[in-house]
Length: 337
Image (cartoon, rainbow, N blue to C red; front, top):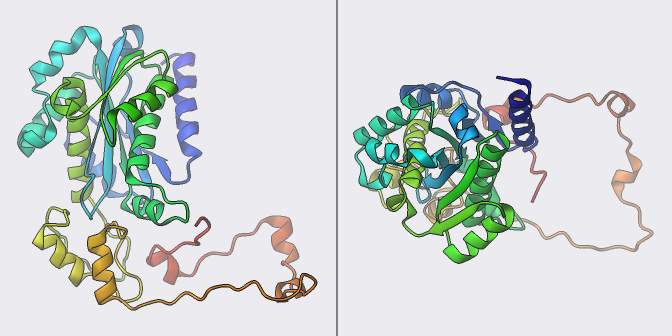
């Protein structure tokens, strides 16, 4: 890797590290088995991003890039966005690998195609972002709500940006839509004015490059779910939770059996989903929030005015370690509403 390539990689990493809800994982993935170790020791409360090494051919030749997701509907686990890119001159290779809509393929076939993509690392690159169920739920519960569609579009846009910044010569982008294709396409064209952008329904079954992205996303999500390690160490959660979809009776049973009356669900659960909300309403304790009333005259002093911060903390920026009660239950300060 020359100096210019190193600078491009560092720029991408620094840009992504600025997001506190995103962690970039630099692990060499040569086959599907490596995905388990990629996700096994992760902090599942933040998003995970992985980029394969960019092939030299994808820097020197104009490329097509596809975008798709896996795990949009489940109440359990992450939603994974994936991109795949390859030179326009190698379109036929994707067809030969068998790239098709991941939902129409068996798990075995998806795994085989994913391994094939990894084997052709000289001309095919890919990347995924595993969006944490914790991030998804918190985004939808914020005072200014962030919809799942918005989360999806931001993830797709950032993955495309990162690929371009890493040196991929992107000439064409194909995206499986969320929401109205026309609106989404106009949004991407505004961000990438020099690139041909096509946003379409069922793009994963129309464009092999989108199918490749779909397979990377689906295989990664499958391994992320299998490798899930519960951080709530004081509780032993059973690992048989079904498909994760709200209509799955096994998933519903698992949710009902593993809800805490005070702390709710472990971080595997998207607690903003209606299925989870209904179980919380019936199985957990109700909480009443008092309305804060603005009373008193402007000249009236608040009690906090009679206290000062510790001089040592103000000068040294010392950080008080959280009690293990909070760390073991993955509880953190609500700094953004």
